[in-house]
Length: 206
Image 1 (cartoon, rainbow, N blue to C red):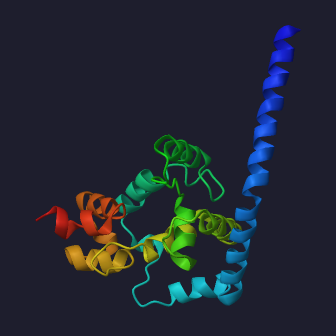
Image 2 (spheres, rainbow, N blue to C red):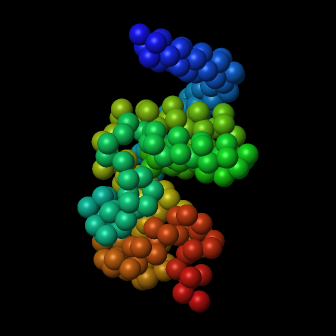
């Protein structure tokens, strides 16, 4: 009985902490939602997707090397096919790391979140922007299947030296189409996503 009472107290304490956290974060959530609504109203999601697909360098998921697709998921979002827009494990890990160092150094963003950010938002590290990004991520997950999300991400990701999208990057760095990327080339391009100015193939191969 004493053990049960102790568990009950712990659960009540945790519930209280969560409630306080929600109350304190409510202004940020509301502000983030307003940023999201403004972005979506300015350029609706379906229109933004069509804009991306109309680019002459846009490639479908079937035109991208399997090596690259596997490596980008392994590097950026291992649970991509399992979650619904947000990787809770990575997010909690990043949050704990940020608390530990006293600054926001890790984001824990899923591929869907990164796509949302690239489609609509700046790269600042404000929490309001992260909330807005989450709302777009949930919309993307409702509207598209996983392969469509991955396809869009590959076409909008930045690879350094002014190259946006996997086709521009493949041609610029290796003179090949995305489907012809070797395992080594795919690995180098995925590494580039972490820091395009530092890890792009031209920098690491000097």
